[in-house]
Image (cartoon, rainbow, N blue to C red):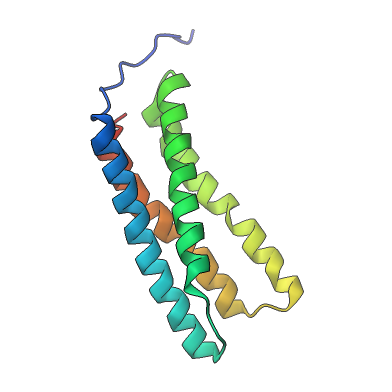
Length: 134
């Protein structure tokens, strides 16, 4: 028999602290991804627009924060759900990158994009754990 008892979730940090953590995670992800993009651009000899990495990094962290907060709110055992959901979402985010290979993008660029997804998760998850504990 399974138990439907909801796990007690620790309280979230004050909203200002949550917002600051999200901004800092987005900043870290954006800086690292911009540097990664610039490096790939130098290796490939192509131009690189850093605003793309900045925008997508911020969007990725914001979507991650919304998903984390939603799981925290609705899942009976949010820590258990996030333990498998976060890696699954990161791996699923590789699919659009891999599809870019059919449009002639280089393997280096596609792998770089995939690494950028991991960077967003690596910046966001520790911040979320600190201010939105499960």
